[in-house]
Length: 199
Image (cartoon, rainbow, N blue to C red; front, top):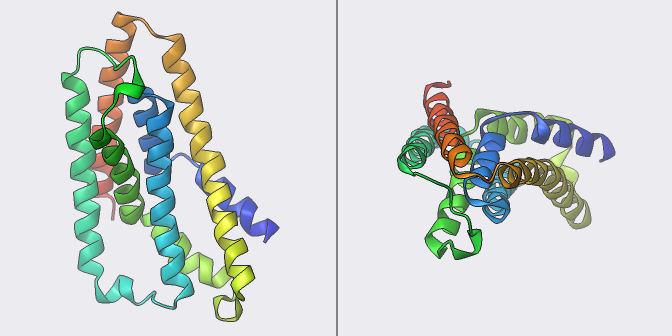
């Protein structure tokens, strides 16, 4: 289990579309939004763990078209959010004033990206079952497995959210924030395009 935690931690820290999503949301709207995006990512991870443990890996083949649609939906959603950032003139300076829709937007951002992430699919539905004998897991072992996954992903993604939030706080000047807003938009659009084009 320790080796699995190490492998998952490295995978979670490895820069990818989910890490970029957390960083972008945190940089644009504050640390809380980065946390909510992380919760969306965790939800997607837990869904994959459930599929793997339940022996439902064949779902990826039987409804493969659904995963393709989710992939395009997630990519298009990121592009839409990125274009929205380009149109902003400044960042929201008080994240607490964000409405519930923004929270849902951050959550769905992380959730859809995870479902469409080829790396996540490969890890949980191919590498995961090969690494652990899922057929002999007890209830307690399953709980430990879930905690390991949650811990590894949370440590990595929250670190990304915290780093970008601190950078945003240090650079809290109108001119600089406008430039960062454009950069965040470019990152989100680029991530969305990458997600759509990646096979």
